[in-house]
Image (cartoon, rainbow, N blue to C red):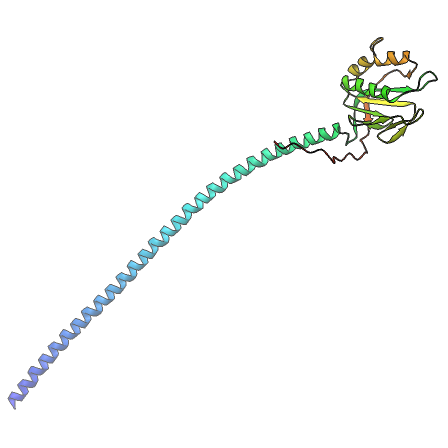
Length: 237
């Protein structure tokens, strides 16, 4: 009976020790697992944080680079726009001057006027007008008109019958009022040369020519003829 009790006590002690050891082992395992999980989480958060910081740093650097690139592009665009505006202004100016020379716009400026008329002794012919136009151009005339018809280098002058003069399809009759824009001194001096000038030569032939009038504001109308180019082509270099 005592032996049984001793065995029971011994077994109880053994079981208790085993239980304590098991609990200790389990406690140690739980503790290790807990510590391992926390460490892993902390390590994971630190890694993620470092990764996030690295990503943001990279994005920041890319943003700075993009900003610098945008600033550079903006500067280049601005310079280009300014150059284009300058080029555009020059093109507009050249186009305006070309249109004036081609007679596509009404122009005004200082110059001279004079009137040619038929007489019983002399009927004005196309050559007389062409000669006058050439004399005016030689003296620096920038624009010429006759009876408010613009005279250009391509202007045709004909005399189909009698005293009728046809200029670019428009019928004109005497008197012929000539307007020329240019330096008034050069224009009047060239036409008024004694004996050899246009006025003296043609007065001597019987043509009636008024005295030259110098004016500060002469208006010469634009050419209303359609002068489309149909056959000419630019040579390609």
